[in-house]
Length: 137
Image (cartoon, rainbow, N blue to C red; front, side):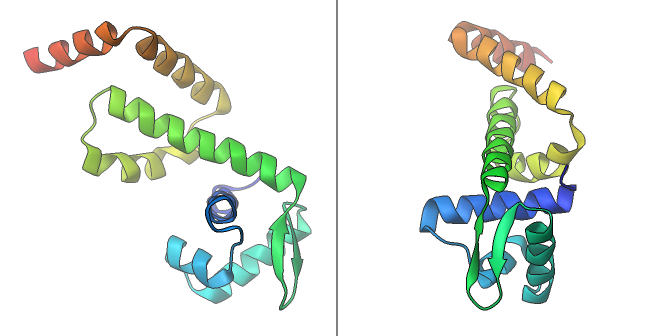
């Protein structure tokens, strides 16, 4: 199981590959606000743990294992953003809040939050009742 730090890198690599078709050390460093040398060390670790295939001076690609984890991490991130939006968290706080909590929840908790998001999405009136409750406080 990847550590929270490894998850951040896998998620970022997955997102870059999905949007740009590739991920470079410099892109990852910029996105995660770390030094390129830190990215290189983590890429080597992710290669050792079979999340990606890395060739020095040539680049890297996610393995099937890395891609599967990346998909799940992006799903978790997007689900938590959607959940916080539904419950009325201010938009300017959502990203930082997700970054702060996503590594501290079990996958069971993520699945239950997914159930709750689906519950609210099935009937918009449920969201309206929640908003009304929030206004009354």
